[in-house]
Amino acid sequence: MRKLFAITLLLMTALEPPALAQEVTAAEIAPTGTLRVGFQTASPILARQTPDGGTNGVVVDLGKFVAEKLGVAFMPVAYANQEAYSRSFGKGEWDVVIGVRSSMTNPSPDFMVADAMYIAAPGREFANASSIDAVGVKVGVSRGGGSDQFLSQALKFAQVVRVPGGVANAIEALRSGTVDVWAANPVTLKEIEDALPGSRVVPGAWTTGRYAASLPSGRSVAAHSTLADIVNEARRSGVVQRSIDRAGFKGVHVAPE
Image (cartoon, rainbow, N blue to C red; front, top):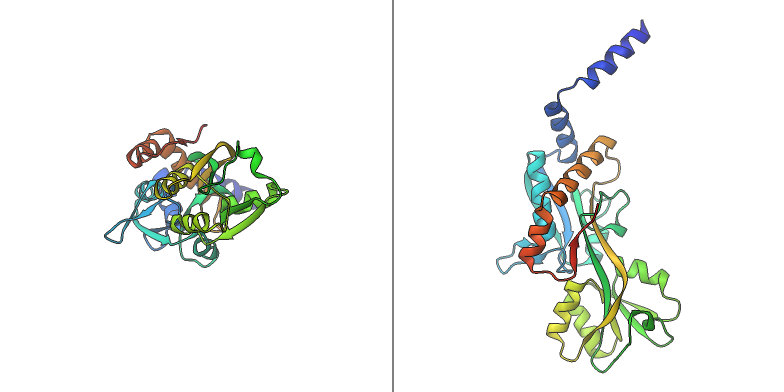
C-alpha cells in the first residue's frame, strides 16, 4: 500500500502543470511578489546612479528581465560600494544578487565576461601586466571585491592596498601615490583614464572577470535551476548584448556557452 502511494505521489509530481510549477518557484524566489535585486554601483560595469536618484546598467536590465519572467515586480537594491554589498549577504535584504561570480556561493551560469587589467598612476610605467608583481609595487583594489579576492592570492611580491570601492576613490589613490596601479574591469579603468590625465592602462589582462546571479543560501534546487534558465535565456536571446551595446562598453562581452 505504501509503495502504491509513493508511486502515485511521484506520478502526480511529474504531471504537475508547468505553469503551476513556475508559480511555486516564483513564490519561493520572490515571496513578497516583488523581486528585490541586489547589486553595487561603485563599479560602472555593473550599474550607475542616475542624476534623478535611480539606477541603470547591465545588472538592472538583467534584474528586470528575471522579474518579468517570474511574473513579479522589480525593485533595485543598490549598494554604494563593494563593502556595503558584501555585508548584505545573509541579511535578507535581497532575493537575487547580481555581480562578480567570485563573491557568490551558488552562482548562476555567467552572463558577462570582461578582461581585468591595471591602470598606472601618472609618472608610473609598466611594460605589461606580468611586470606588476614586483617588490615595492603597490596595487590598489576595491576592498572585498573580485580584484581583492584574486590578487591577494595571486600576487607574490607586490603589495595589495585595499581601498573603499568607487571610481573617485581609485582616482584619489592613484593621484596621491597611495597606489602605483589600480586593478579593475575595463569599464572602470576607462573612466579613471578619462578623469586622471597621465594615467595609462597597462597592456595585458591579469584575469577575466566573470559575472553571474545568485539566490540566498537555503533556496531549493528548483529555484536555482529556474534562475539559471532565465539567466541563460537573457544571454542567448540578446538581452545582455543589447544592454552592453546601450552602455557603449569596450572589452566587455556576453559570456560564451
